[in-house]
Image (cartoon, rainbow, N blue to C red; front, top):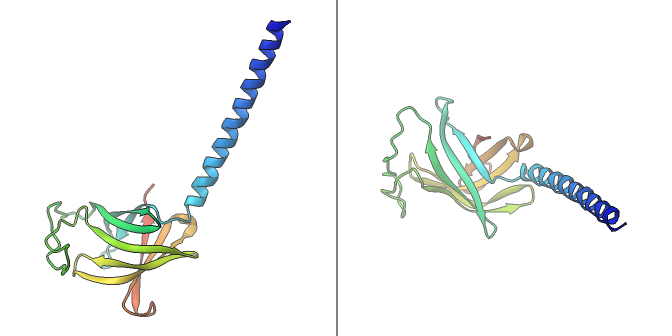
Length: 160
């Protein structure tokens, strides 16, 4: 009788394990779906003039602050040794590859703002507001001076 009892226990344990795996898998999918509303990830930037991919920017979060770092240049003539000669702060002379261009952004309802974004082409820093759109596939990044009405928005595309 004990063997039947042990076999039954093992079957129950196996069934419980399958249920747990199914629940955890579903939870992971839900977490991934919730992550679609977050700017965390790798984003492809688009050149305003050519409409072609320009760079990959990785956005990460630490202690509620979102930062964005250039992780790869996508232009045909990109030089990994290129530096920000136009920058006027501590980033002057720093390689653009690996440079943090978004700083101090924090979640504010459905948007992310309160921080700064650097245009390494001209060395200017702007106020930054980001909004995840299109089910998490795109990120509207707005750089502005003063009020948000005076600025421009770029749409970045999430890398898969």
